Length: 465
Image (cartoon, rainbow, N blue to C red):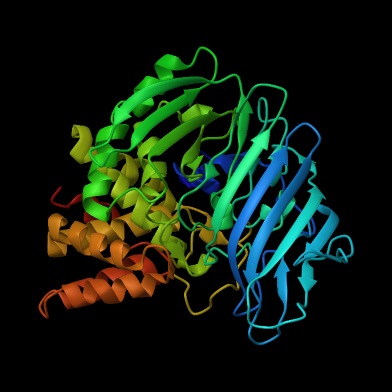
């Protein structure tokens, strides 16, 4: 996502908060609704990952946005320890379930689906029909019918409000998502084309106009979908998107999610901004649709956060810090824009000056033990302390060497999940013996210390760009 909502509100994003920094541009940004003071959504949504060994292989989903009905087919491998298969379903009403063609009992309301196949070890198929609840911008956790003509929001673990799913960010599956409505233009991704985490899925409905932005060097067609009377804003925000996408392809490898990238304007309300990485149809808030940084940030998430998944929410910096830094590199390459004054003066300095800010950027002593909707890691630290970590390592290794090292890591680990420590270890392997003490200092000061370095602003803006 963009920054969590920032504007005294929360800085995506998808998704910082000034005094309550929200996530900035990116993903969570969209959740900025929360920054406006609305309560944290409550409800029986399970944020827990599936049991160890659970593997969702493939899911084909169809949603009716008029009747709030869904149907889907899921292929799963049973857990080798328990022999069970299961999906998180606590926020929807299951109407019918079959397991390998035989009727199966739906769970009790508010429970997750857990079934035990007759045979063990081989993949099984579940088919299901369900009703999903109509949610709102205030709850920001499912199909929000009041987001202009309607839009979904399931980041970070609210997919059980929309369809049966595996909410863990490490869980990747081959998804197909189609949706229909008798009203407006419905934008759903269809077949994603590569494994993705459940939060990557999104759908929007509205009176959309499409702009053809051109084709990247890697052959990806790029489109912008804007709401009425918003064409000029769309062109301002996306003017450098094709060139930035070409930089990302050269640096990180081919675009993972098919032959087209779409950026979709979504009206999340007057206080929202940022975006969410719903590749290949990313969602960007109306407030931010004219902002090139948010557009490029969401594009970069195709590689870091989507294709290269994070093992757990404690590793959020691997998604958001890397993506924030990549957005700066990509825009600089595309049109010469220098984002570091924005990152440092508008986000990092207020974040570090906040007397209540005391957040370790990489709390990886645990994995899967935090709820990102309430934990302080959902603020600006992963975005801006994370980006400054990469900026400082770029000063140490040289920007081109760092870009190449990150590119090799993404190519090697894309399609699976990783921890931030895996990338740190990779950078240590790429560094010389003389460079490793500087890398260790950057890890400690930007990622593992609870507060910012005393000279944070000077250290983050001093890089060779």
